[in-house]
Length: 124
Image (tube, rainbow, N blue to C red; front, side, top):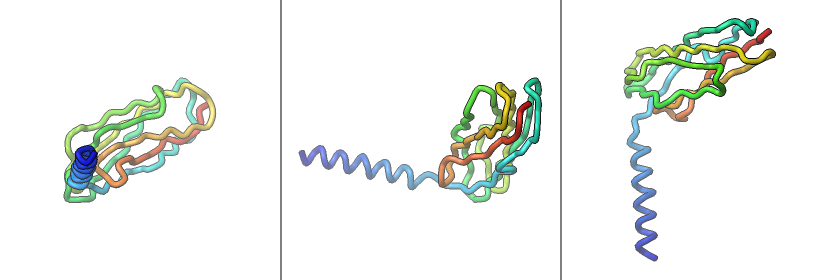
């Protein structure tokens, strides 16, 4: 029983150490919300969002997530150093009419690790 407790303790301590040793960065996303107004179902929208690293620690984007197949992205996958800016190109091809708000989630070595920005508008 004591052996199990010690193993659990070592596991939690090692996980905590790994998280605390991760270099945390602070970023600025421009724009946080892009309001595109009105587009038609046959339109394709392309927008470049910019992420700037505000710290001395290198920024590493682990992943980017989108809510549906109608939104795709491209980005530079290397480390971004202090005051450098990375472009994230978002392409939106509407698949339904109405008012939309699409979230794009960037997972990176930031606190919190998930950062969101949005496309917002109306599809006719």
